[in-house]
Amino acid sequence: MKAMVVRRPGGVEAMSLEQVPDPTPGPTDVVIKVDACGVCFHDIVTRNGTLKAGVKMPCILGHEISGVVAEVGRDVRGFKPGDRVATAQRYHICGACRYCRSGRETLCPDRKFLGDYGLVGGYGEYVAVEDDNVALVPDNVPLDRAAIVACTIGTILNAIREVGHLQPGERALVTGAGGGLGLQAIQLARLAGAHVVAVTTSPEKVPVIRAQGAHHVIVVERGGDFSAAVKDATDGQGVDVAIDNVGSPVFEPTRRSIAVGGRWLLIGQLTGQFVPFNPAQLFLKNVSMLSATSTTRQQLIDCLEMVARGQLNPIVSQSLPLERAAEAHVAVESGRALGRILLRPNG
Image 1: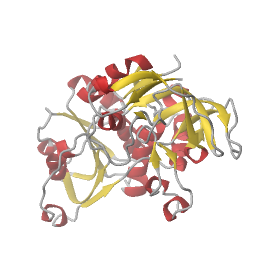
Image 2 (image 1 turned 90 degrees about the vertical axis):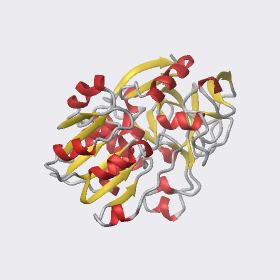
Image 3 (image 1 turned 90 degrees about the horizontal axis):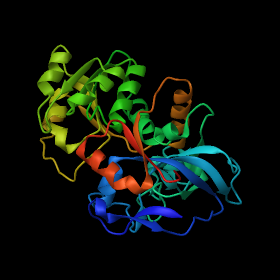
């Protein structure tokens, strides 16, 4: 099959279009003919070497996958050839540890992330994924939109429902508001009944950010301090919940934007930068620093159902052939991408 392979960390030139063996299903594997794969900033930090934990090269990038089942392993019962499916971000969990047994498989110590661990990713015509990490796509949800549901919507659902417990009437800050996670965070925060303040570095993205439901949109230069504008938008109080999709580059202004007793949800980290801070800056305001990573299969199913009901809209700005993966990476890395860019390995 045709696949985009990374053999060693580097720039976009590290991605090479190659012919690799077609995947064959193990006992619990679902082989998917890939319809679409979203390009996430996670792919950037895997490709350039910033992310090292759990990465095994050579690898085929891509963890936001949808497609049609081509073949199943002998022990697979819930899927059959021809089914329309989407994946969670992993291709393997153990299914037996205390995390898997309690619906927290995102924390499984044996988990292997799609696109990181070897030649198992969505930047290829086919991929084999264990059935624990696959969900059926409702008939009225287009496959190209279903591809990005697990990462862009499911991760945010995990953060604000399971971890952050965002409540109706609370004030929420969304950083990186014009990106893949940011636009979905606005939608989900509004669905939860929050008053949403969105921050972006891209003035041209403001109309789309407002269209997703943001009550206030703050435009700031990269590295700028937006905390005063957040305070102005919240009657001087700050926000109850910060949904932080950016990480280190916005650490200080995000910290200053959080109200007394607020919760800080760490979701994205775009650089390898470390941040020094004084813990008293948090505990004197009783601020909780929390985090959420990836999506369980049940969260993926919940999100697909909300998309099917029209409650959420996965935002895709562009679809490109696999051969143009470098172009997609440049757009995502520069911050120009609005929502998600898709790769279509099978045309």
